[in-house]
Amino acid sequence: MEWDWGIVGRTFDLLLLGTRLTLVLFFFSSLLGTVLGLVLALMRMSRFRLARWSSLFYIWVFRGIPVLVILFFAFFVVGRRMGLTSVQAGSLGLGFSAAAYIAEIIRAGIMSVDPGQSEASEALAMTKRHYMRRVILPQSIRVIIPTYMSNSILVLKVTSVAVAIGIVELTGITRQLSNSTTRPIELFTAAAVLYVFLTTVIVVVQEVLERRFALKT
Amino acid sequence: MDWDVVWESVPLIWKGAGATVSMFAWALVIGTAGALALALMRLSAAKPLQWFAIGFGWLFRGIPLLILLFFAFFALPELGILLSPFLAAILGFSLWTAAYQAEVIRSGIIAVDPGQSEASEALGMTKAHYMRRIIFPQGLRIMVPPFTGNAITLLKQTSLATLVTVPEMALLTQRIFSNNFKFVEPIFVLGMIYLAMTSVLLIVSVAVERAVSLKV
Image 1 (cartoon, helix red, strand yellow):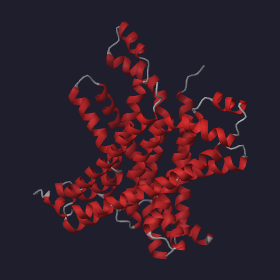
Image 2 (cartoon, one colour; image 1 turned 60 degrees about the horizontal axis):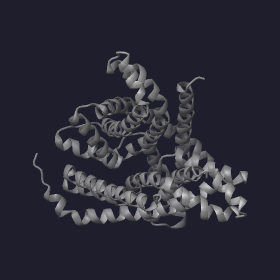
Image 3 (cartoon, chains in turn green, purple; image 1 turned 120 degrees about the horizontal axis):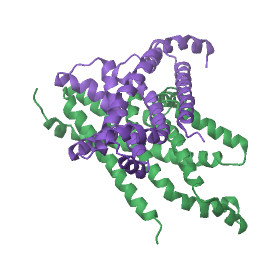
Image 4 (cartoon, chains in turn brown, orange; image 1 turned 135 degrees about the vertical axis):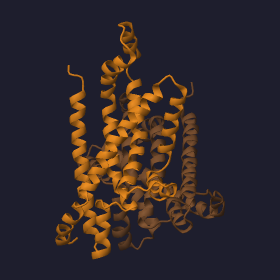
């Protein structure tokens, strides 16, 4: 068969439109996932049993169920009742899923800080809220960044599942274009290149952040 | 939520469990064999083998799994390779598994103290021999937790096969959406079945970890 790589150039505007939607999903699901993940991580380490258990339960459920099923729920159940658009429902579902993983990453980072730091802060009469924010969290950031960023790559790739609830992000637009032009090889290769480009950007950001938060000695 | 609909949905969705489990099992077996080969290539002295393994990992871990599945399903026929949806899905899942598990196996092997290899060489063992009898058994202990973690991810990701028309559990659930216009109940059932399956795998992984741990 004949290759026709020109098809990528002719459909590039549409592919970029899909990429933009991928980035929108990535941004909102990361935002929701990080905020909720931080809350879950703090709940998990709270002294109230109810808070610990509900956080543990959330993490068990959301990590035990495929993201596809979470998206079905967000779109067909939550989205319909609340009248959300598919992109809103998709961001919600992806964000709630990401939160479960991010919670564990943040918790591991916080626990990696020497307990002597909390003890010393308490000896200095700081409140827990105060020393968590000023002493523990800033130190844990260094441990959190690498795992958080490699998780972000997964979050980016998993936005492709949103095609299952009819969102025409990069994977969705590629599938449509490949059906209408019968050029699947060229188009899926182009989509793969775009994804690899985006994940490479995340890796570069990770390098920059790691350097910025590294201990200055 | 209507519990009658829940109970009606269970057998309809459960019919897809066989496809889910067999995709998982095939991809795990084929992917792990590939991962072992890739890990050994990565650790070999031959540069082209190293590059191949690095390139493979970079490519298949950088691209969303769904794109791999679509490529196998839509693009391979254009190249004259016509796979059934089931085989296309297994191909995609196996490539994914090979790429991720190769990293797990490799990091397990390099985590073993190099003194162990040196001592084995000093005892006149061949590389093939001490890799198999000395290094690998010790690396196994480090590999088990991330390996089972990836296996659980794989099980969940078999749900994506619905998008390449494999009649597994998620596809049968979508069939209930369109036939009965019911959503909450079938999604609840599907979620519970997956949660049960991943929880069983979690228990198995703890048992395996215990089985390979150092007995002191």
